[in-house]
Image 1 (tube, one colour):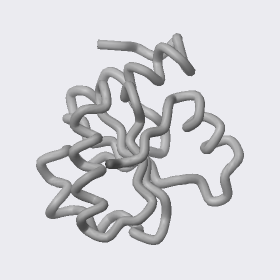
Image 2: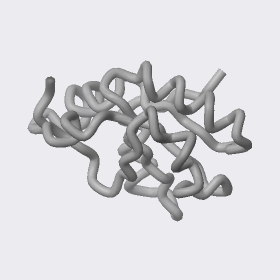
Image 3: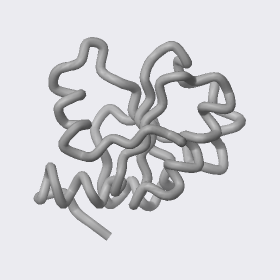
Length: 107
């Protein structure tokens, strides 16, 4: 089972960790046009297997989608590929907007 991180915990990680975790947004391009987390790498879910080499398996990775379902699947995939520090953003970007950044657009 992939470890979960809630939006408030992720905010604290981004503010205090050195180095900060890699953020992987697996949503579709049209979703990023609505809202995004700055600094997140964007690899749509269907392209993760062919682009997984863009990520550093030695660094923590937080996987993000709309509500946390697609990201959970990608996080499991990354674990099977040997990534040992994988977290799923519980509630996804929608949870981030509700709990951390209410000014962020939602959909």
